[in-house]
Image (cartoon, rainbow, N blue to C red; front, side, top):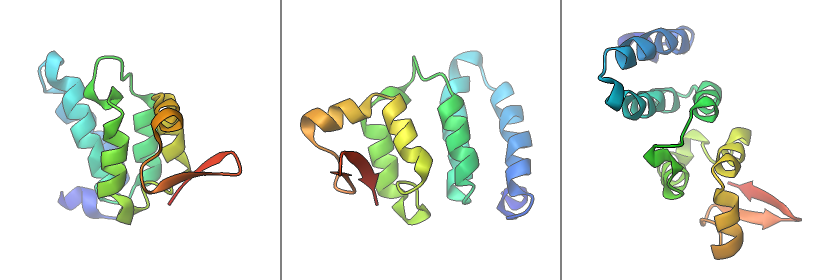
Length: 120
């Protein structure tokens, strides 16, 4: 954590360490740990990198495809501006969650304004 906390070098540190850690995991556990470890970018305020990595992941056989995950993460990490980040809606849309919102309604922190989704 010491290397990751530095606002100047922390992102580069995580970029280097996370792949090393994931590579040391059994293959069947690698995706799970990639998702867990990627949240360190979020915790430490490297939101752009977090969303970049999340959007690049193949989520076909993971629990990340569950519609409640971005809503749960959005609820817990709103103080980090997670749901107001421009990429939040990209993640939600890439997972098909917008369709669920259209049918069942959005979470409390999102609404449709003038035909566009907005999250606070």
